[in-house]
Amino acid sequence: MDTVDALLQLEVLNIQNDPPGSAINGDRYLVGTGSGAWSGKDGQLARYVADPGY
Image (cartoon, rainbow, N blue to C red; front, top):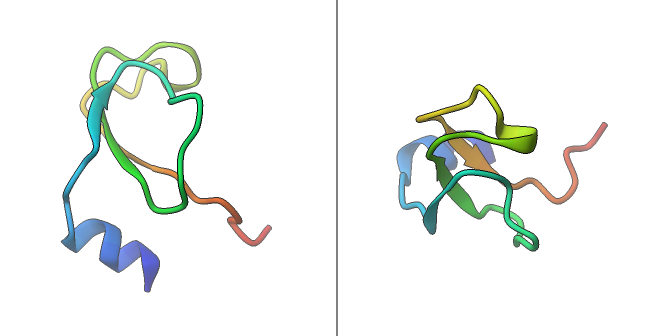
């Protein structure tokens, strides 16, 4: 259900070029010019998941 919520509630905190230093579960960002871990992800939506359940 969290994935559905992330897609339907498209509020983002910021446009970021790389992952933020600290994030809270569910935070969403729009990737600007991706760098670091977000390299090649320009224009994509990034959502922080504290415990992905692997």
